[in-house]
Image (cartoon, rainbow, N blue to C red):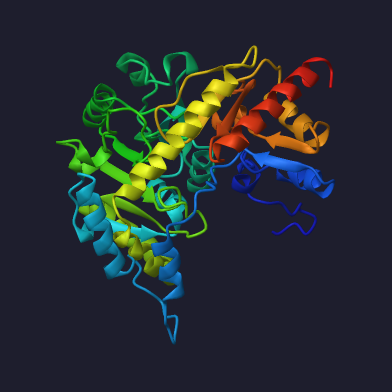
Amino acid sequence: MINPEQELRLSVRAQLMPASPIRRLVPYAEQAKARGIKVYHLNIGQPDIETPVQIINGYRQIDIKVLEYGHSAGLKSYIRTLVDYYHRAGIAVEEGNILVTTGGSEAIAFALQAVCDPGDEVLVPEPFYTNYLGFAIMAGVKIVPITTFRTSGFALPGKDEIVRLITPRTRAILFSNPGNPTGAVYTEPEMMLLKELALEYNLFLIGDEVYREFVYEEVKPVSVLSLQGVEDRTVMVDSISKRYSACGARIGCVVSRNRDFMTAMLKFGQARLCPPTIDQLAAQEAAKIPPAYFEQVRNEYRRRRDVLCAELAKIPGVEFTTPRGAFYLIAGLPVDDAERFAIFMLERFHVNNETVMVAPGNGFYATPGLGRNEVRIAYVLECEALVRAVAILKAGLAAYQQGG
């Protein structure tokens, strides 16, 4: 019998869903801006580099009388441009290996739901992209962290340490390469270790390769789809958001040579009908972008990385490892609670009506207590702004250490 006095409540899933550490301090930033404070946003990976004119013109040139549903797998014309793009990147795929998604976020969510049942486990090197935890909760999946450390450049631990985390419910290893938030780029031996684990323990490898173009050393990142002998268990998720500084164009994709997996992906895609048509039409214009574009953007991010590291090195007590890829850096601060410090910067501190917003590091870990004195810094502002932002950060740390 229904009890009319029974408490109305939300699901456990809704209660467990974490707020984004990248965005949860936004109200403090909005309040600071309302007081006339300029906020340097180092908390979010929103580049200030202009979206390529080819993509912008793609939007302008669209002439549609009826904006119809598209194919659930994505527009054929756009998928063909993706095949060509991946071939140029040294990744041989066919049209049937690709399903277009509404951003890389949907690609990750679909992949977890396809390879896991509720209660299953996925290994994830931590610190990790914070939304992985949200996607896992939505799928009823438990994230089991593989802890990596700033002192070792966030390299993967040895095989024995990872094997100890594997249980009968482990279904996959999810990782970003190049890494968000660490900037780590996995070496070939590390990728071979992941391949070995996938084969020995019958696991999927889900590689998030959104930052493929942004590597600042001579070595190229090894794509999960380049691993030989594990074609049936490798999945790549991708997005145009960072590659073309087009975060508002919610176009991503999931890529795999596993036919059963891709069949499942299509069924998930049919449930949400289709990815955005107009954004796909604009995104396919990326095929007209000259190769020099990536070299120019990569060089700019390298300059920003070097400027950020040089300025951070001037602050007593700040510890970091120079990132090799992406455009993020995890820094240890001389504070007891980085989130409290981040709020202090927005709520109580400014230099000539300017302050800085960073992302507290604890939200990038699944292990309780880790990242408490760390922040993620996104070097997505031009160099002069980065120098100014770090100077404000230095002054803010001094004020915070003196009791605010």
